[in-house]
Length: 507
Image (tube, rainbow, N blue to C red; front, top):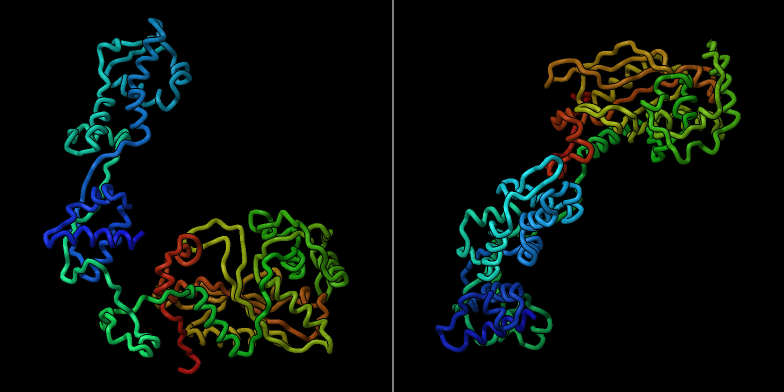
């Protein structure tokens, strides 16, 4: 089709040096060609200077479907007036009018009838104030006039045109076409220029008579598209590298759905704890319960909750199996830590010291605001070894935070159901010039470790923080919804710089 359009254009211009296509739109209609294809051919020929073109812009009105209905059946106000007159002297109620002419016609027509004072109210009914002979259907007349003039903008006053546009009866259309004359390289038949020198041309010698396209050595190549790492992933990659350098092994955290047993019960968190309520946790409807948990371990956990052990009196309540088996979206990655510690205690060959970490998504039923989402990423690390103490915990935390450039740390006593002692971690924010909470930490309680089967003198130190907060600080983001979620700007992801933390331990 494009080739035939090119041939038709060049053939038309071949009649004389002064030959011209005044307007491609009527020319295309005369020659029964698609105008868009003609425009494409003109642009292609212009690129090789076979023709020279000039853009023409034509504005005209087209009638909408509703406008065409008005031309055929009359305007809504005339239809409404006719229906009211037909109803007689007592008039017609609004529901009956809507039933007779339709809700849309009734709404538009009544508004214009009341505006023109063609209709008045008589109690609950509507009665005509004029006869059909007293009024004229100006709207229909204007649309007919436009239609007969082919939509010519000069055939109707601007005021009337604006009134029709407000009623969505007409639309102003701008059509782009071109006037075309011969170009500097005009020829009756187009010879395509070769873009590349091929082996076949060299073998046959055809390259000697072949016309090649000119090369533009200054042009830039097409921008290469590709994926971009989200700022969270950049910080996550840096954290992973740091933790692996410290000798930590990453835990498998790709299972977002956990049972309440691993998420709460194995951590010595009572079944009556507020965090286990539906307003804090997302419970799964289907499947609502897990299939199984290690039965002997379940019994030891149950006993620790009900009667205690390892110097503890427990919580002294009836431990419920149905509560422990409820499925949920994990509220922390510590649900994975408890499973890893259980495997560590029961592995072949017995317990061996280990360092684990995880960085993955967790879910909590929280009200979303500038600093909170119902899903976020948790960074967690733990060390299991013989005779660890609080000093080991503080030293490990300080080493990690120094590696991400935070040297000023403070620790504040806190409470966690499954760690004792517990500490909140505060770091000094140089931009905000104040101390801000950046994490939590503690030593896992014996009530949690003993049922797992870990040796009596094994201690587990652990700490955690969100991934979002250091990312927001690193990239100077004030609202967490600008970092994670459906409101994130793609441009921010594309332009986010590489994440690099200055290791303060080498300073």
